[in-house]
Every structure is written in C-alpha cells, then in structure tokens.
Amino acid sequence: MDLREDVFHESYELTYNRLTSLSKLEGFDISLFEGELEHLMRYEEQDWAGRGEIKNSEISGQVMAYQVFIRRWKRGSQPEDI
Image (cartoon, rainbow, N blue to C red; front, top):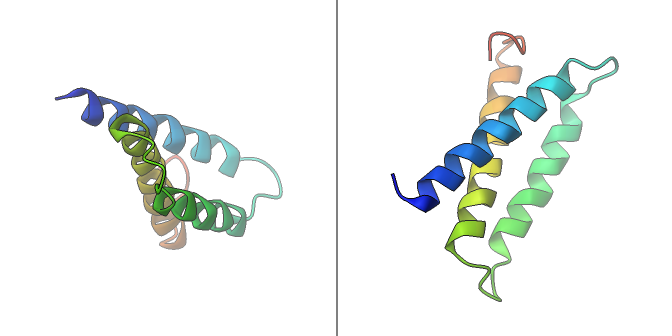
C-alpha cells in the first residue's frame, strides 16, 4: 500500500469507530450523521485550491465511513453488528 491508501484506511477506521461510539449515546438520531455527510461531501468537492492527494485521501476515507455506516444503520444493523 502507498501512503494515500494508508491514510484512506486509517481515516475510514477512525471515522467509522467514532460514528459507532456516537451512535450508542442516548438520543442518537441518524439524521445528524446524514447532515454531517452532506457537508463533508461538499467540502470534498471544493478542492479548487488543490489541497493535495493526502488530504483528499483522508476526506475520502471519512466520506466512505459515513456512507457505509448510514447505509448499514438504515438496514437495521446495530452498532455492534456494523
């Protein structure tokens, strides 16, 4: 694996684990994560200044973690199963 892949996977894992932890809190609402994903995807698209491949890999890992978590949550998986 190259550095970009390492950064992507690390970002994915950290983000997914954070989402899992937050989803266990009382009063959790998946719409919060959906809103965060929407903003994160906008940020991902706004690379007009050229933030670099490493940062783009980090953001892509975060977006993927949100997408996977939300999809699994909506299928009815519990955080422990996700």
